[in-house]
Image 1 (cartoon, helix red, strand yellow):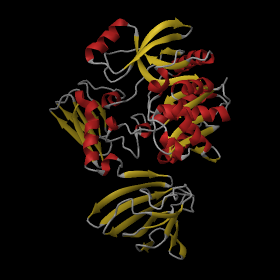
Image 2 (cartoon, rainbow, N blue to C red; image 1 turned 90 degrees about the vertical axis):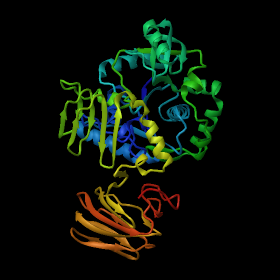
Image 3 (tube, rainbow, N blue to C red; image 1 turned 180 degrees about the vertical axis):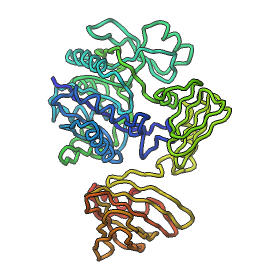
Image 4 (cartoon, helix red, strand yellow; image 1 turned 135 degrees about the horizontal axis):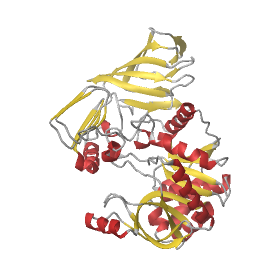
Length: 484
């Protein structure tokens, strides 16, 4: 039985705002060591999977970002990633539908008795050897038809995690006595003192056929909807795009749907370090402390009479005077200043911004697209200026805008443009004008990145003023979409 890693890539990580946002969530945020969490997750499973396939369950918004991130990881570490596959969800429906889809996919591609190693893409685990050892224990239990989860030995009375009570001992693990919700402080302390409870990590290991049998018994409505979505999936090489029936699946976690109900559930006590980076205190733990307990990730920072502060400010000089136990996170378009003890409450700021429909909830000033990136340099009433980078060989959709015109100036590289009925090349220091209502397309036919400045003008400059007619990334199904 081969171990098939399944990486679940989604979610926004709102407690790590303003670094983590909807268009560029926590798994893709680059950590102080220069690597993202999803890259670390990928490298953690490459040796474990051997010749088995690797599956990532994500959505179209993160699909190209995930592929690019995997390719960059392989390039940096000179480590080819073979036999990778993608399942694209039309809507997020929690872990039970996602794992059901993975099990159905594995049944067809890897064999019904293949062992799924299901991992969130946003956990930090440094000890690879201990992780691999725990996976082998879990796989041995999974071969006996146990549904296995991984428990983390608690180090503090943490109220932000669910807990697992250990039951009878098994070879390599324990039967699960019960799952318990996030406790209050006193209860968490009791759990810690007893030694009988583990943190629920949200990682799983189980045979595909065992999971499908459990879903049929305890969550048949999940399995039925996902089976319909798989039957209606469109397949293109290594990528399956699930059918719309997936949206009808109940929005439920695998814990509620199956793990709390099934009899043959086991837990392996992890011998490895684990951090879900659920809040800024977790992120700060990755940064070395100075003599005053400050943790600073900033190339130019002045601290005077500052103690126990976390400072994340990679782009400009930051000065801190007379502050203690403060969190400072600076990005090009948003600044967060908070009491360190209240870092779990950052998500309330995100909710407040959502109620105002503020763009900083979803987008950074630099936005990643399948073809490259764009950075908003300046905007005001009736104008917006962007820096656009198109990767070699890539091209934007054939599109038009109802309300805005665009002026493109090439900074470096070569652009092939379609402007109405005209097609031509424009070089460095050349420009072109696209009037509103005109069909147009931008392409990089060269061997280096194409960089240009775009000046937009018009009465409405929203990103949803796009009508697509053709798109190599499959985004032209809807006539209007909020991406370029």
